[in-house]
Image (cartoon, rainbow, N blue to C red; front, side, top):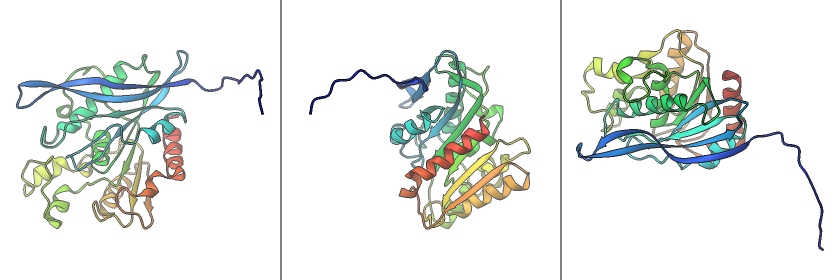
Length: 276
């Protein structure tokens, strides 16, 4: 049956765009002979008269692999709930051992603050979220606020964040490596050296001015044990930090429960409350 009708819609939401492959920093590559662009994808609302909180997503992959575009469908849905969402690339363990990737994520945050007007970002409302190795980088980004972890451009801007969401983050790197006879490429120092182990452990950097945290971890995770998030939770709670910890019953590492709508509702509610 044919139908012809004139319709209209009340404009209640801004128009969202995906700005892909935005270079936020450049680093030496291939033994220092060439230059590599570090890039991110930015999902943002075009709204000249309004600013939005920004959430930076950090992909996992054992510091051996990562893909900033892998979860764009979910990140796009999160953005349309009222956020700018950026998914940032970073150097892997064989390219730049600790603190390489941490320097990169902090550089990405500074870039976003420096270009806040372009992307309708409220510079006072930044969150960071990531999975596994990315969850570790989230914790370090939120907690390790030291000048030695700042390098590159836009150093006049802060890399600080106002909320952090960690999915199954490894925290006790030395303990995990020894228990499972692992070699973790990102951590090139001596894991028998207590000072080095402390320097790479997010718990070391917990202080009274840490931002609010949301910790999410599968109770049956065999890759990054559940106790890793428990360790971070205990350290944050001991300093009276605003921290929420949800164990996902029966779930393993990066399982399907982490990609269900109620899970993302929980995340959106957390960032909406902490970045309001």
